[in-house]
Length: 303
Picture 1 (tube, rainbow, N blue to C red):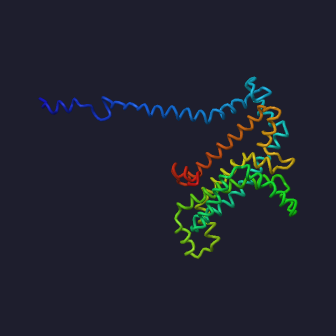
Picture 2 (tube, rainbow, N blue to C red):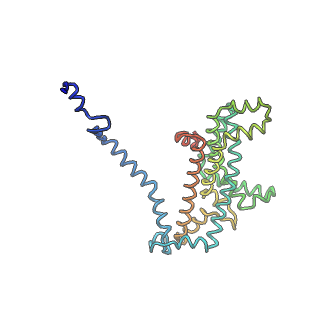
């Protein structure tokens, strides 16, 4: 059977998905330069962290001198009571501070989202002031305030080191939780709470069963972030601590006088892992709540 010229041309054309591939577009030099610059910036930010993780496996006496690879630094954490006490104090105070910040920050965030008005902008300004105030200012202000409450007014709980550290660490964390919860609740429909009231639920039941349920992903995210932020509150902790309750950051500062040892890098590596796990849990909680990557980033930054 004879073929027409048109049929011959159609048969000669490659089928879809076969034959000649489309040529790859050449990347512009500006894109390549930006990619290289991005890698350099990432190395600049994370190379010191990588170095400290590597030196946590140093078997030498001093952190700055590499002697060999081993797990001696991690085993020394178990056998040295001073390190154990410093880590315990940091973890306990971070947990208490996170609870305080979560309770206060959740209520503040819900109030700002559900009762908008001029007061919200004034309150946000105060939270911003807490966030940007240098830690040294907070520390200098907290020390006489704690002494006044504990000694002048006779409130003995403020003479306890754990209480002082927990209150001091919760200041900045409370502002962070407030931002996160407000950002979450602003995007939620208030009609659900109105429907609960229409069904004759009292305000407490509506808050517990509806409002708090809507805010719970942000509450959990705020709690985890508050915990990680409270682990490293060095300046405030150095001012408000009392004898016998030295947190880990202050212990590291005091160790500078005699030289940093590898066990300091080992504990820092463990705390880094805790921070990464906490951030991963934050993203997982928000992802399970149905948030997109953009929404997760906006919620975690309080936007």
